Amino acid sequence: MEDYIFHEGLPPQEFKPDFEFALFNTEKHLLLQTTENWHSYSVLDKRYNTVSAIIYINVIDGVAQSPLRSPFGSYEISPDLSPFIIFQFLEFVDARLKAKGVSRIIIKEPPTLYNSERAALMHTFMLNLGYHVVDAEVGAVIQVTENSFASYPGASSRRKLRQSYNEGLVFKKLESEWLSDVYLFVLACRKQRGYSLSMSLAEIKKSADQCKEEFMFFGVFKEDKIAAATIAVQVKKDILYNFFMAHAHEFDQLSPAIMLVEGLYDYCRQNDIRLLDLGTSAVNKKPNFGLIEFKLNIGATPTSKFTFEKNFQ
Image (cartoon, rainbow, N blue to C red; front, side, top):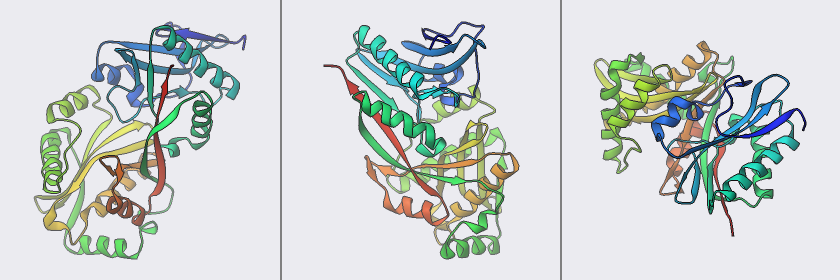
């Protein structure tokens, strides 16, 4: 313990992270969520002047949230940090927030399969400290290997993929100029099905402008017509998150989303990305079984995505 400092506030400049933070926990994305009311807590390793753990929490009216507005926030933990230090750090953060008059803490975790060993520790420790799960979503992740995508889907999905090729559909990685076209396509497809999007076009443009390297656009085309498209986000160097995806009704028979996922998988293989996150499948906090079945049928592995809450009495 004498090698570590539990620190409140931004880490001193001489302390540099010894591991990669997820995009949603970087300064450029935190400031997209809001420029106010952020509080940070970290574990500093005095031996190497490194940051071994950190969390960014937004506090408004006695409610502490990590994140404020993004798919997940929570703790970033070095793989080398011991369970003992991790548990003490969680206790430290809880105590500091309680001292500030916080009455409730809400922490949205990343999908468990991002790092299953770390997740097992964190979830158990949070339950030990009096947190409870207030939301549980089913996610789906494809683990990218040396195998081709064709080895993953079931027979019916492989058949639709072959049909898409026979009908002349083509997968393309798109330049940033396609942002509005892709967004409006996905929005129109969602509206046809009675759904909406969690971000406006203006918000997506602002995020993509701030995170130019991480926001990507892909589509499947029948000549010049979009059959399916997605906005993807590179959450870490080795994780690609399929953020907003949809396909046009007129192509239902071909399921062009399968070709879209195949193209994303191939992109991951070519760029040393180990996980393709297909996102969660829920409507009004209930499972969307059709979407879950689709993702599992094309070879995804189910994963949990938990939101934890703690109330101070």
